[in-house]
Image (cartoon, rainbow, N blue to C red; front, side, top):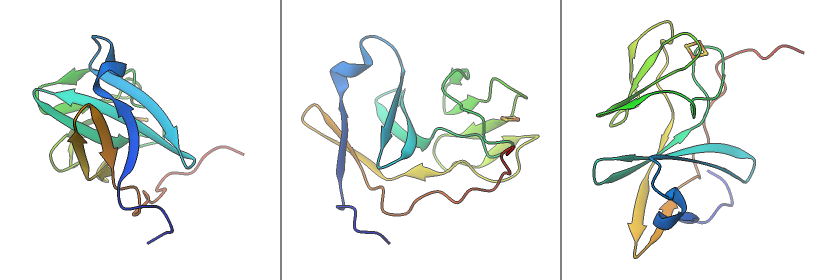
Length: 117
Ligand code: FES
C-alpha cells in the first residue's frame, strides 16, 4: 500500500484521439491505457520479459503483444499467453466516470527484470 489516493485520474476518453493506446507516467509509474472493445484497460507499460515498453505492441482482441520478442499478454488477467515472458503483466483496477479514466495505483508493479547499468 502507499499514500496514493484510491482512484487517480489518468486521462480523458477524448485523449485517445481515435487511437486505442495511450501512454501516461503518473507518480513515476509508466502506464499503458488501452481500449479493448468498450473496456478501458490500464497496464504497466513494461513487458515482463526484459522490461521494454509495450506501447508499440500490437493490440488485438483481449491481448497485447510485445514489439520486441513477441510475448503476448491477456488483457483481462495479465497472464503471459506466449513467451518468452512468463510473469504476468501488471494490470491496475480501472474505471471510467463520465469521460475521466481512473486507476487504483496503490499496488505498484514488481520489477522482475534486470536493467543494464
Ligand atoms: S521485452 Fe517483451 S518479449 Fe522481450
